[in-house]
Length: 280
Image 1 (cartoon, rainbow, N blue to C red):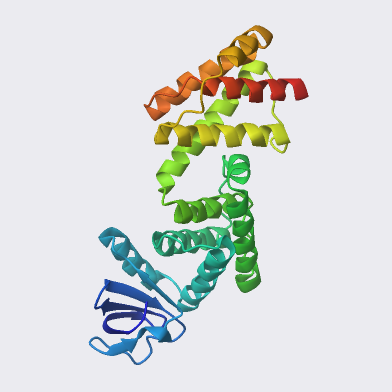
Image 2 (tube, helix red, strand yellow; image 1 turned 90 degrees about the vertical axis):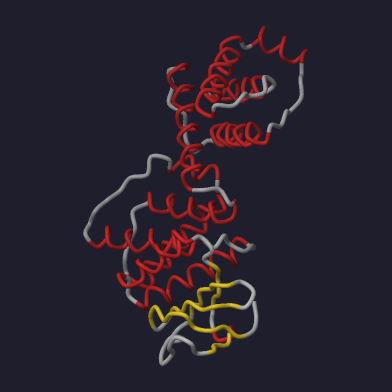
């Protein structure tokens, strides 16, 4: 994005809302760029460290209302965090992360300063499903500690990872939370059926969770992984408990997602379940 814009509003010394000839409203972020500026001034885009659109009116209002409650140095620091995430992920982030993650981290810092601890029930699933996002979220937590001396609880890494995943997949946080909740429910059903506690750090647990995640994606994309009739008969005969459980899991998925699940999923679920029980 290049060229000149006209300043509409100076939110603080580090953030300007401006009118762009092509993209209409844009938000400019950079250290001290708002100092001495006023509405109607022409401003060169190359002076900003970061330029992004806020086409969603609700997000724009949320961002504008949020900024007065946040220290200006934190906005500058958030810019460093978002540049780090974008560089490490190797792709552009959906612009809603500017609002969502700024909001989240501001409140997380506030909670940490008041010694309020929040657990994250999906932490193991998040680490298993989104390892790259989880690693980068850990780096963000380290950045916050190095910059502000604030130590986040471990669960915070998971929450930040979800924001990163949302920003690179275009999925909403509510959709991601719904899928993670479903996966946790399915894993719990497996543990209850087999009367076992699955080692959440094991390779077989990781494979099962990854498979469930991909199965949910296939449901939404209406993909089939192909019929394996001979394999079905063999699995039904050799591993009846695992095969029956795989169908229980499919029925739970169908009910929660309110969509049909391809019956061929039972084959691969049975294999993952057998690995788990065999390993145990």
